[in-house]
Length: 577
Ligand code: ACM
Ligand code: ZN
Image (tube, rainbow, N blue to C red; front, side, top):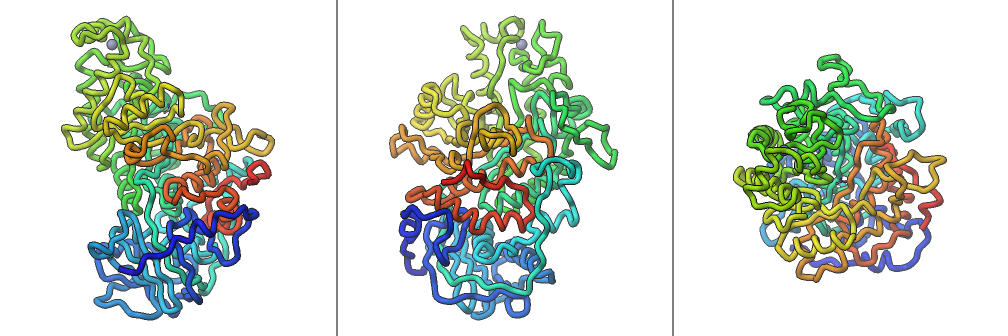
């Protein structure tokens, strides 16, 4: 066990510094919990440095780091598996033994003039140690970072090359270099929250599997670990379900009011034009790619509202008397056929996604058609229910019990708690701090339920980033979620008593797709606001300082994103601390 490091974070961040970096302070994002500067530098170059590891469990992280260094130096680099690690000229990955283990996803990085050592108890920790090591170097350490292994030459900006800058890949790939030095330092680091998520919404704005992998790469760069994919909604059904082919032959043909959404998929013509969906095999590939990078993919199969695409494909799930499928239609929850179809769908979903949680949506459910439907009314009578809200509660319990019986857990938006506590369900709070939401959060936490905070006010990345739209794309609605607002987010509500804090397991930024029109645009809406979210989710909240954070963005981190080939929004005068 190395000696405990003295936390220097507070010393470094407490003064009201200008938006530039204190001399010699590396611009790490998210900022680590403990960092102690050392003496001297360590040189990384392909001629002298070996990347080595002993335990098989560290092979991926070592190979991954070698891959990135190879891109920076434009040369071959391979890690070596060794019995005993050399003392000099090496980057060593070491598996932490019991007792010396930094907590889950944690790592210790010690850089001396002779070597860099990354000690971690799991793959995520090893990758995060490697990311921090890369961040200690120049921005070219992220040269062509995103997805180079999988899609050489892929240009996600092709379809919108002529558009405004948020539809374009903005930065040229930097020239490779021969080597670089990093400052000596000791860092001990682990996340504050276990759920550090982003949501994307291909039901509204379709993105290719390759683009999602690229998104995962940039999540890894920020130590984000959960990607929720909103796979189904009224506008489209995006996941192949073998038991119900119509879900993609009909349901995946998007209907929506998005004249700017000019995508045609796929380019090779193997599926009908306008039929945007992912095969199960493609999704399994994405899940594996993300898992290797410490990112869990959580599928969201929206029910019982937001189901017009499901109803277009399976009209027998309409309520009696609802012969017309309107965008807001909900499925009939009174008939048994609904549960047969949904459980068959969920069986296939669970086969593709090994995640502990399957997200059922459950939000914004219009219940009007239930009031007049014979099946729904009979179900209400059977349950002794006096209103259709109780029917929503019955539906949620029944489907989540099915998941539970299969060894999984349901997650849902905060509406899932509207009919009372749902043991074992994860709730995502999106409706901010309304009195109703506060009551639900308190009650759910007291019942021991786990919560992820994702309020519209701080976490909705589809909202505009600035009031003035003369140089920025509009977002959904008129609300502004600025960089400063996001950075100021505190996931633990101040009304929760300390013993309930541990029920809040994290936060998530939601990038809904209604007003997105290209993949660069998606990135532009994400970064750097999700850099702020990543820091809120990972770092020590004590001494958090927006001015200092902007200093790290402008003093190094945004250059990394440029080198990595990521489109992002440059903070403007309105973002000045
Ligand atoms: C939501 O924004 N309806 C979760
Ligand atoms: Zn019905």
